[in-house]
Length: 354
Image (cartoon, rainbow, N blue to C red; front, top):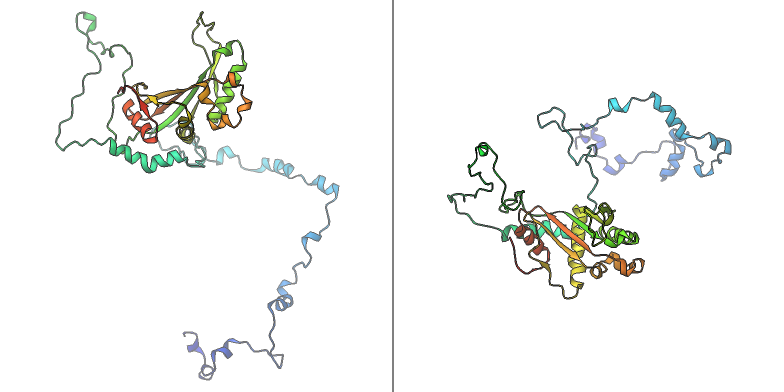
């Protein structure tokens, strides 16, 4: 409407269709014209080539020989700016939170500890984040009314009896029977919900001392199950009755982390454990009092893994060894670690030790 106010009174009386349609000055009867014919007559498009690039002549062998882009890139290196001076490099060491130069977060591709991914989300880990984590908080909830005094913790280190003058100013002794202090069980909150941190799979093949083929089969078996290249382990001591000498190669082991650990445990729970004949579960006495549990597979049970079963003819049946599985969790006691695995579907039987 604002544009029509500047038009004369006679022009306002005309219909809008006649105002918008341009008049043809050189033709008595204005006919319809297509956009393609107008484009070819435009003087601005005279410089465009009408021929297609598919009809261009092919390069001669001499021209192909002279086309060397890598040579131009190599000659251009001497004229560019040095990358070490004008390119950001993260610090090699962390000098504290107050230092003016801080390392970028691990999610930044420039960071030294950057690891691309994750590229997939395992079903077991997704179930843990969506269901199991909240269930563990509900099962382990311990209501403490406000104002309840804190429970006194017993002394974990032993004092000296003071019978000698040398006991004065000595540090306290460790617990009886073990020089290492066990972890103190912490209450489960939203800050410390137990989760799986890593899984170590180890296989011992004492026949590999005399026949190295057993070591090759064990290493191939672990590589198929875990998906990582296992390391070769050596004997720590000599046993005359078994014919073992210290330093001989007699086993393999590998450690998996993150998504690979959850995928391995998922295969064990849903594909291997249900197919073991007369399997009761995992002994409840397992554990190291620090939240780490262990169980094992016999040679005939290792063959139930789908990675071994699909290529079972590739492995000599009498040379497939058993393996031990160590599940390391962030729990602070074996009771919490068993609760974590029970919510994932692992049964336990026998005497329970906390």
